[in-house]
Image: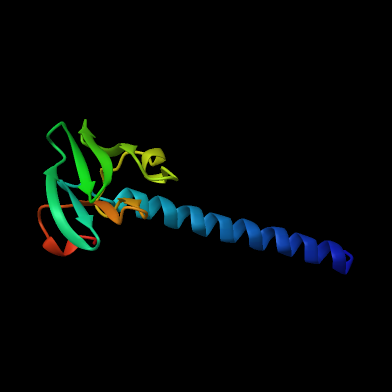
Length: 124
């Protein structure tokens, strides 16, 4: 077998092994995530509100002249409206697993899922 073909075969094998290891790591990580109990709302690094994921609510997070609408429905938290220019937080999928976050950088708002077991889960 010529050296170029051997090198190509080895490169393809290496890429396949790296991809498989990354996929297995991702699946293990996702399967070990726990469903959270609460969402915390931090504004400028300070926790201001805490809401249970088991209750369906809709509330406005007001930071000065800025507003984000937080909705908790079916055990997931969403930002459905925001008056920030980029609206990245509005486009984020719902969160329900411990450690997941939604961030609105222009308003300095962080919505994070935490468990009720450990206060150290809070991400601010």
